[in-house]
Image (tube, rainbow, N blue to C red; front, top):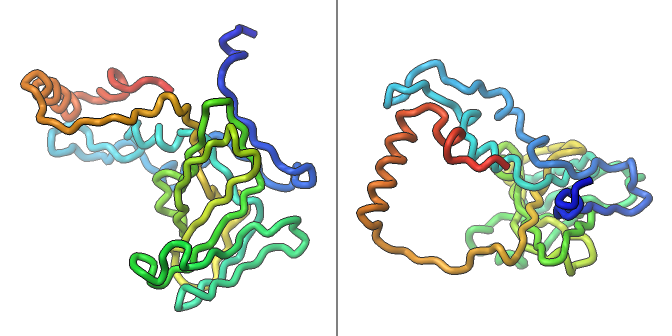
Length: 240
């Protein structure tokens, strides 16, 4: 094996031995792209306002690349959530012989409730069975699965130095779906895991007026964006 392959950064997902083969494993995020996205054709079948073929989100490479970032942690088992009219006294259930509690409650005061925007919100928490090991110098962004507006919950984001944090990270969330009884199936994507090398983070910024040369660059790019097919994919995108 070439040395460069041996040195490639690697993420490891570790679970307790009793869970081996019982819970679904984390996988590359693109494997969890939503059904609504998979069903889309690339073209609308009508021209856009510039006379080019009208395209759907399926043809948007930045959206596909966001779906592909990092890994997804799936829900370890079926979970029943009973959401009452007040959206506060939420009941939860799962198979009685499951070896750990997959969901728990937070206190509303932990997110500032009942003050806006959490006037009637009961924060919950997915209990994650996977410890994430990353190389030295790496942190992990844990966030709601990107562009997954179809999911009936919204996870809070967190940035954890997993090269030093030697235990699991859980995922606080709020229910955004309707009231009633709902089953979240085993394997539902609950968090996207994006390893980031800390020394690559850009920390400085500047807001300023564009120069004449930069305006010309932007105008040329704008012209190509709307009048040439697949320009981004062909000329601007760096293959991941």
